[in-house]
Length: 251
Image 1 (spheres, helix red, strand yellow):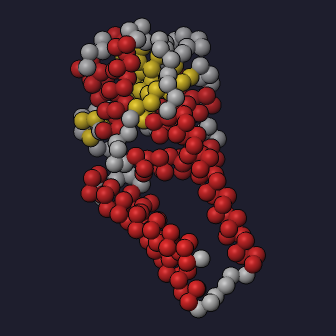
Image 2: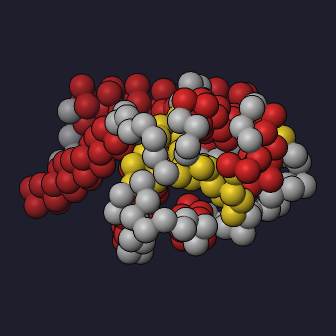
Image 3: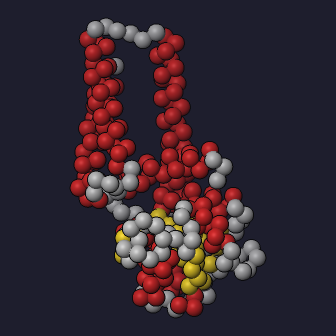
């Protein structure tokens, strides 16, 4: 029990340190940073509770102890299974000569693309140069703090990086991944077109699953890198995203 309690303490300290790294790097409002703060505080409080129980020789009832162990093992197993799917699909390679790329939008600050979106667009531009017959759909509406739509910012980037404007189709109404794909489908004129979704590696599994749910059967993922400092946070957060979309029937 003492070994387990110290492992929990180490986990809590790691979470708090990582929270500090995230807010130092990306700011206090960084998405999902709250999780690491909450997990760190919870783990350290749990460490002291376990320590108190050991010191006072307090033992949980057998049924309750078994239930806690069962819930923990079940939760951990589900997490590992989903994470394995995310990692596996994020490392698959897309075929050459796809008919369309759909580049999924991400936040734009004013008119400036963010790191996640830069990696997606850079990967798309490289693919388009290597596959000159492929068309690209840039998908993303305009949200708070954005002076132009994500699609317009993406189009501008691709043109500046050597992609002909007549190869670029814009979808500028969507506000989430589900809508990205739903609205982009309307711009695909070819039946059973070969389509690759361009997004960061952690996001490929969910995106492709959503696309298949919406009827795009000839679909693949084209994985882009993620910000190295935020990678752990992205991959942990994505597990919750997969669960949410699965529960609500979107994938």
